[in-house]
Length: 311
Image (cartoon, rainbow, N blue to C red):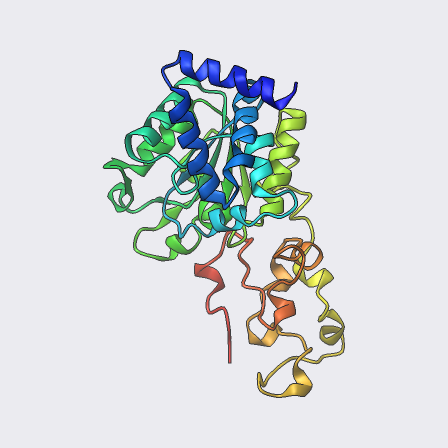
């Protein structure tokens, strides 16, 4: 359907619900500012998204004990661009960091989505295991919000190490819990690494959209497609490992390409596709830039993987 016709229908639908055209254009302008887009471009794109919303799965994104690093990773997607994901692929109903609305408007959007049900629930950050009072949002316990949103969700996607297995918060006094522990009985797809790799998230979402079910998972709830091979198996320093060349002096230029195992690298027992997929649009990853693997795709991160560097 042509964009302008969809735009008109979307405006008519919103006006019937009490949202005047002027207010709708203000929302479009706010969305444009959020993503650094031209207002003229975004109005039609947002209108198209509204008009097609019925055919796109609603997505709720909650943040618990987190640093928002996974949100930053998602916002930096280039292939496809984040804007395309938001406007053409999914219907992101609630995300406290990315959404233009705030306060009562944001909470109203959350409430409407939860009441409708049938949504994909994306969770970033852990749930405090020591005491629920360690994490409150808008005066409410995060665990309460999480359980409420998960009740009507068709699938829960835990993004990042914290949401998957507790991550760094698990090593603190809060004893952060991953979604498997916080939501027993729910289908949870774990996408560890710190932060989540945006391609892991987009690929999982697209798989669910195409098939209506989560991808094949390993025993730890991770998609087999992304977490079936050891970092060590595809590491470019593997040759040095086989030759017994292990870095002992960070300042020796002769050792710059030697294996980092003796300096704390967790690659030999971490399953992830970082060496092949890499990060930042395929530019680099930890080991290639001179740091050892920190094991952030494994349940033991961070507590059991520290210290990250040795010597």
